[in-house]
Length: 278
Image 1 (tube, rainbow, N blue to C red):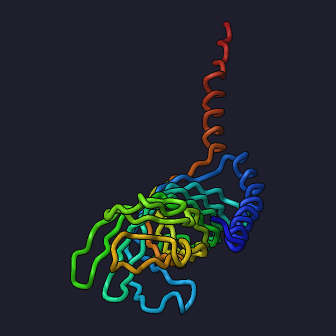
Image 2 (image 1 turned 180 degrees about the horizontal axis):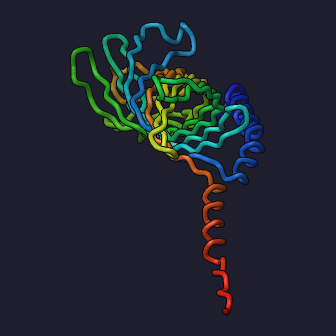
Image 3 (image 1 turned 135 degrees about the horizontal axis):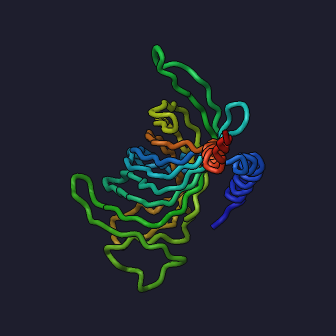
C-alpha cells in the first residue's frame, strides 16, 4: 500500500541512486572497491503518527540485531558510495489498558549511503579514519511472531500472517492477522563512526547509526487478534532505530594486481642474452 508520502520517498531514493551510479560506474571501471560484512545490536521504538493515536499506549524499547554485507566504491574528495544489503530483527513493544503486545518482526534491508571521511590519529603512529554518512533505507517485511497478554502474565504466543481483508475463517487464536499492511518500509539512515587498519588491505569499522522510519506499518485498524480483551489494533506507527555495528572490510585494487602480473609476465617472457663465441 503506497501513500503519496511513500511514493515521494521511493522517488527520492531513486534520484539519489541515479546521481551515485555515474560516479560509482567510473570507479567500477577503475576496479577499486571494498567488500565486507557487518553485524551488531539495535534498539527501536515505534512512535505513533500523532498524539491521538498514542493515547492510552506506553511504548517500550525493543531490542534486536542487524547483519549485512557491504560494498564500497571510493569517490573523489574523500567521499565513498556505500551499498548495504542484509537482514534485521526488529519489532514493536507496547503496553495498553493493562495489557501488552510484544511483537518481533523480520526484515530484509537495503541502504544506499554517501559517506564523507576524514583522517586522524588514535595515538602515536596509530592512524584512523572517521566518517559521517547519510542516505535512504528500504526494508521489506518478511513476517514475525509475538506475545500478547495481561499485566503480570506470561501472555499467549502468536505468529504473524499478512492478509488483504478479514474473513470468517480468520479466527485462529495463535495468529495475529495483519490486514492491509505496508510491507515496504522507507526511511533514512544517518550515522557516524571510524575505521582503523589491521593490515595493508584489511580494516575494521565501528558505526553508530540512527534509522528514521517514515512509512507507517499500517492504519488504525490494520491488525486483528481473536481475543476479546485485545485492543492494540493501531498500527499507524513507524520505526525509529538506533544501531551499533562492527564490520571487517577487505580493500581491493585490481589495477595493482594486474601491474604485478604484467611485471612477472615480462620477466618470464624475457629471453636470456646469447653467449658470445670466442
